[in-house]
Image (cartoon, rainbow, N blue to C red; front, side, top):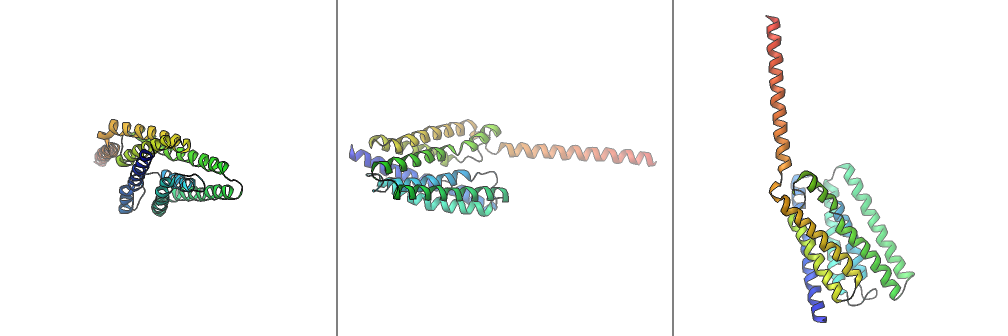
Length: 247
């Protein structure tokens, strides 16, 4: 059982690393276009908070036998900070203020959890407090793409919901869910079970609307061209009437 627990910990680390790196394609597009377009920065801020809290929870003096949780989430914290900074640089003013506000809130919440767990709690109470905090924000992290899922359903397009991000949400959630079950740790199993289910929902949406990728943009272009043609036609008719009056 211990070996199986370790195996799923390693697999969880690998899938989580791919999950953290999957948005690099999106951020390459953001840097190239110098615009965040319709991409949301909220998932990256919430993922950062989850990584920070999970790193803290996985430390030996908080919860034993969870070092794999700490190592991968420590790396994830660094990666997510880079993503957030890039998003802030290229986001419109309104979005920039929103993401910076959320980023500040993340640092405040993490600082409070660290302070309370270090100076006010000890032993099992420390593990319960940090585990509960990490679980709550893990569920929030996994739920943050719901806004993009609403966009997908409304526009019937998966342009702004990258496939690999959805895939690795599912794989990561499933891996850590099994890891938590084997280690009998509900603070790892429960939130990642939720993540696995939400990742599966994203994949289902992707396969339903995958053929409509970018369709709304094309339809919008057609409508604009049609309006321009109608406007040109109307202007021509007005000009013709004006010439007849002059005659």
